[in-house]
Image 1 (cartoon, rainbow, N blue to C red):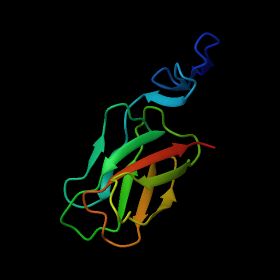
Image 2 (image 1 turned 180 degrees about the vertical axis):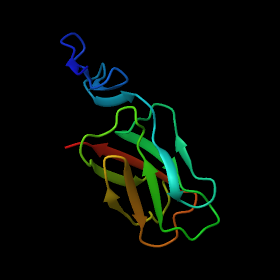
Image 3 (image 1 turned 135 degrees about the vertical axis):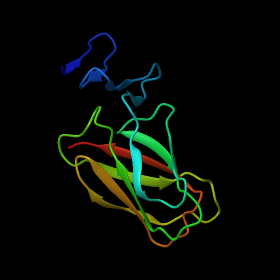
Length: 131
């Protein structure tokens, strides 16, 4: 069930996905299962699985395509009860960052739209928070 630990300050929503402060007081999402890319995103896109969750994850856009969007399906473990607010950023440290925006969002999926098909091989960070 849902609980808040008075010892660690962690918020647990299902026993698998948690959010709480680190030793340095930084809010961190951890546990659960990372989402998957289910449409678009070029050839061979990948989700970075280490330490990710539905609330915070990274993915690399694939190559060799003219896709201008990626559809990401949230893990059923730690799913949102209402469509979350998601923010995406270009983390590839390139001179010209890719222009992107959050598209359609539901409790099970989110779409990230690229202004142009120039996102090949870019590393994208995502933060999604339920409301």
